[in-house]
Length: 458
Image (cartoon, rainbow, N blue to C red; front, top):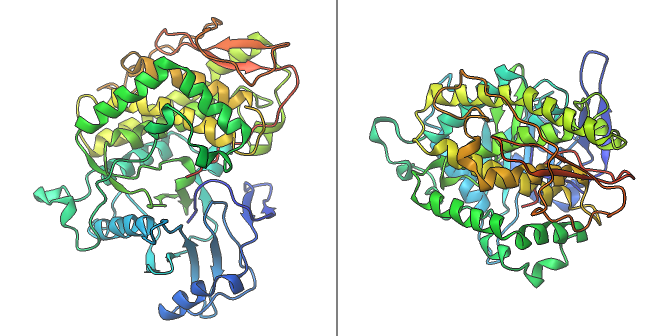
């Protein structure tokens, strides 16, 4: 089981061998400051955590992974409480567990077993999948192949059909009602102005990232159109926070986890987020030593001395490499669910937003915007402004058997602002998706560390 975004815990060892990739783990928060964790485990009859070997996964939420004194391998996580004292994230996660309890054996949608929750303390326990790797680790190691992508598509499609068998109403689950509130991202009021109350919690780079969005009137209009289309689209149970690090690979099987944003929503959100993750990976591959990062370190430490021509060439290669994985996801999805006719086009729009979301997320720890995330946002702009034009190129058309060309062009688009990037020695590369050119990176002569894709702050 894993959580979302960054952690304040210090990394522990990265266990690896010549035959196995590194698994990044963290030192957990001391259990003496969170007595509710062992209290829940003891109420569940699992015994408290044994202190030896206790570890944590990266994430915004405190979490603990280890073995209890009774020999049970368990993962425990906390979630934030609302300012009014409510537990909306816990309630959404419990609504998912109630819906998922009706899945048949062998379902393509697998999730770690939920052992129990203390709603008052906002603590949940799950069966630990020892040795599992997050989807982010798998992707960075180059192992999130087409077969796994197809399985991901089948899992997401199965999620989108929860509660629809035999005409069953998804709101009729025996557990908490499924949330019907509009998904919070993108926050539409922030398209007009960044709230002053949020400024102190944001880095200068994040504020600059939001300014890029706010100053681009075409992007703002496109996001409003996407929201309008979402409101009239068919809604299904949806994850609404889908990223690679919400997947786990354990014993060769794919699991999907972290259900705090589960709700009835446009299924195109989840499809678009998965597409957006691969496009973000393609952007990072431009700056890896060999054109594709094999570790997070490769993605952030090398490749900033590339020429304009090399950036364009690697960008083309990255897109060509990852688009078949998108196609495999879509194949798996359509094997388990028939999408509505406009789902692919809406998904392209949400993929565009996802890339802006990555720009904002990776800006969290920086004073200035890094060029890799800006590259992804440039592609996102193209997708938002012309989603219909990218459906076939991204292999989301009715048939995924045709392999369209990906056009690459060195044509800058002056409509994309470049504030926050040093003016001297800036090289601009452009990737055209479906024939529409856009700036994808402003490339400074001196390197600036970039975060590996790891998830957006929520």
